[in-house]
Length: 506
Image (cartoon, rainbow, N blue to C red; front, side, top):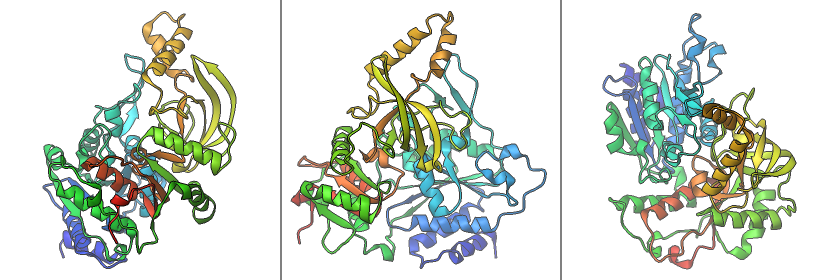
């Protein structure tokens, strides 16, 4: 038996279900990929319901069973990604994701630690000429390792938005990731994603799932899963997601238009997809929060920050009866990257735009620079409930913009900069501003309702989808929005205020 056949058999034997032809092909592709000489990158495009997650978990378990004993003299500094340096066995698979939430989901289904790409491949350099933090590509001292990256459709979000002034590597996360992997000794990279999901903000397609983009790197193989597994065919969530994916695929150039009746959503005969009106919303949310699921495992997805604000206000007032602006246990989302407040905090290199936190306590409310601040203790569920103490900015809680407006950010910067006017050199003033707690204050939004873009990489048991469509025609981007929203749910979806024409006739 050759090495490729050996791995294929192990993958199949370790898979607890009947394989679809697509899953069987995936096992063969991975087995061939890890033993070949002509490629070191495998792109796996797997649609919702195709069993990609289960298949990849079987591959990871198979490699874990083959882990060799660690060499006594292997340098500890090679292990940047996990606590494996203290393990008796040497890791083969390194699990990564673009966001903390996506890493948490990957870790749960693989039953082993997963980390963000940024944490794995970057290390902080000294302060740059402009006074702000610079992160350079870390050396990869590993040999014969397999890097598995999930939710790669998200790669590019932070870079396209260019949030903050801190720079990671070249500014191209995909390029840096590939360079890091290839810097190791015979390391390989598997990229997992779904090109029917929304691409990164400001981009027409996800670079990591684009053959045109990936071919530029050379040494790339491709594999796709489109066949819905048998046990998923009874799911209304997956039936509707598959219908949307097929419509998306039918538009080869991405510039077509679709009418509402072409969507053909189906709820009849399914328990996991339910259509409700606005009048039923509060009672249904109460049931989801306090009976069927939980506050942490329920989310409302909206098209815009304006709609999310309306939902958050209504939920706080009519479901939780919160009278104060912030209460203990409040679910909050960080809406701008932050690189401060993490001294002596293990497991977090930076606080990412989109990270979900819970309010533990808050005090010392004050107004400065025309903005409102407080000192808060926050816990982060996606980072093992790690707690930090940080200055927070309250002005973004109900704002319709994604974060502080350009004018507000300038106002803040100028105010903080004036506080350090006695520092004679420009660089030293930059350094002082960079470390200032007010300038670095965490920008927050309520997180009972969030935008669909912010939900990517995450999963919730129960998802409420606010109707985003009021026009007569829909674009491919509209279909991808709804597909992404549907596939954030594992158990139940409520379609809120969707008009009759979006549903298949009985």
